Image (tube, rainbow, N blue to C red; front, top):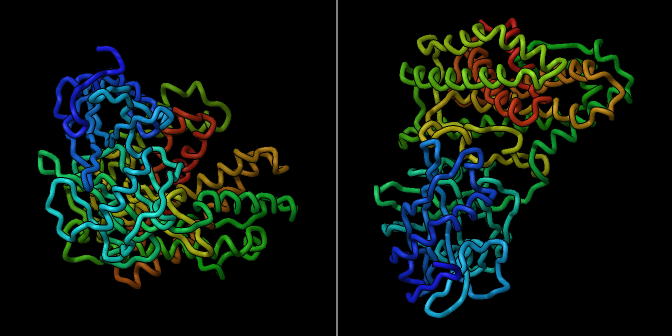
Length: 537
């Protein structure tokens, strides 16, 4: 068959026709998929695509299809993706997003990704507006009691996304269509609904509704999540980067000698009044006050996640042997993978990065021992459902406040691993690593701006980072303890923080070695800072 492919059947019956699915799943679809930003298999070799499931997204005789594609790779694994499709006959429409030219019952047209069609977006919104509380059909629309809109007025792409597609509706809501999907409820949906509906946690975009399907194995698969649109001034990464740039410029303005700045021990909890005046004079008060607010919001999120006693997906649990085995297997596998990467790419490094990488390799047994040294029998704290991929890019700035979002979990993890209950300090460790990154990224991105040597800037940066951590940590621990969330005794907390920060830095190291070896200095300094920290017990 040659394009345009001809079928004498109605669009409503098209997917039941095997000759159509054969054509559709051919190289045409493969070529389309690999060009999409949401496609996550770019580093693997695509073998073939199968249609795992298809279902109708419809209303009043208007029909679209939702497809669940199983993409099989040469390397013997597969991924699932969601693709909604529509048939359009307008030759001027969606030129970039055509999947297949087609003649249906004599009508020329194209199959396109339905998200490009306003009529489709409107239909999904209207189905959410009219959703029944207990939908038992195969394609399920759900709306929150907080969602009281009755009419569709507009929709547009949000346009930032990589792995998902987000659409702004009525300038008040965001519907995120998950592209890569899993045979289970998406953690972003579960966490969003739990925090905003059940716990009324105000500092995350409120849950408004969702679309899910029940597949042929009876698994409940989240397709889309609708939340309120929070007007904001950008994310906390941009905010911190600007602030830190100002702090480095201040070194010159105040003509400071970086080696005379007072230092502090890591994880030494500090109220602002305990921060030395020279540091406040250099850094300013504003950024410390903001960090205290962020610490407060982070603690409140964990208080909400740790105060559930009915829904077993969210009830706190103690550490046990199963968790220890799971954690060590995961970390040791990842650590070995990163070691290989560093060994194979050490030639790409120079200067301080090369020295730190050599030290990393020389001390690999010591680091491995730290990972093996996780002994649950000594730990008294609790594990909760946590954010799982918490960093400054997952936080929105709105006025003097912060909103926490994107609860999908770590991109490299399986869906099951993302739902494992973890020490809440894992999230805290994630944000601490993010502070470290923000400090160094500011140095790397503005190298010629500050009249100090890189060595001096790194020294000042490490001091700044330590104060950031200590001010954040003081507020966080106070609030958590006031609310009786058990994160363990002092030594246990430091052990867990170091453990999780080490894990995070080792994870980052693989990324930097592969994509920008110059920056490998950031995770390497993080790893060595923890290995050399004298406070651990």
